[in-house]
Length: 348
Ligand code: PEP
Ligand code: MN
Image (tube, rainbow, N blue to C red; front, side):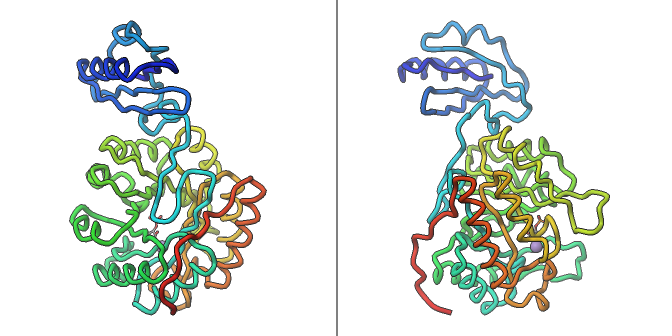
């Protein structure tokens, strides 16, 4: 249920509404908008009558939330959610570029990649250290050693780091290093993991599952939001279809649909969505044209030797070219790539 306050409502009136929400065993989530304050009353098992709220002073109107996802809904929070990640904002007018290898493979590989993508204009560095591989015999990631290399890359380049978490047991270790937790497609419905990330106050980049609907993605985001962590970034990364000429099929539709349904930032991963380096730049451009708030792209200094996802990884020069194109599309959209304010402190 949404309780919309009158524009001139007082803090006391808001407090009285919050107390009534709690008295009905619902949890209040308050949004102070530019125009008005909205209180979402979310309950696990029941939705009471709107009457006890309609009669309260300062209340303009009371509406039922029609969507199954509540806290992520634009109905609850009409303005875009904008939040800071070290050095830039996500969800506002600026487009963010996250880049790096699929997996951290060695210190030299991650440092070389970090400097190259920073030079090309990337805002954040990605790199997996726990890899969800189809085969248990494939490279599984460097673990803590990889986190140490990423921390060094952050130190040298000033870029925050985005790293995939696969399990609850990795949380304590990763909290020491990571700026943004990535939840991979295969874990989109790992509800225990999502709940646990909802208890943290670090940003979460939540990828769409391989065969998940848009609504299922939003319901997964809800698990994180319900824990009080409001910093959720949604990521379209391609879905499985009957088409076999690309690894996945980019659901470009998902970008405007999500932007319509939710206030959360939406980014696109053209690397996993296509599975082929040749298609990454065109689909990145399409994503920005469709309204994405950013892109996450795999880059490797020597894709032929990559331990994972080499086929879809861009060489640094190709990545730099792609950033220039994305910048031009962003301008057409009245946006820009988030500027880089932090200096590089060490060379490669
Ligand atoms: C990745 O980002 O390297 C990855 C494994 O992505 P996804 O979960 O989208 O497959
Ligand atoms: Mn990958």
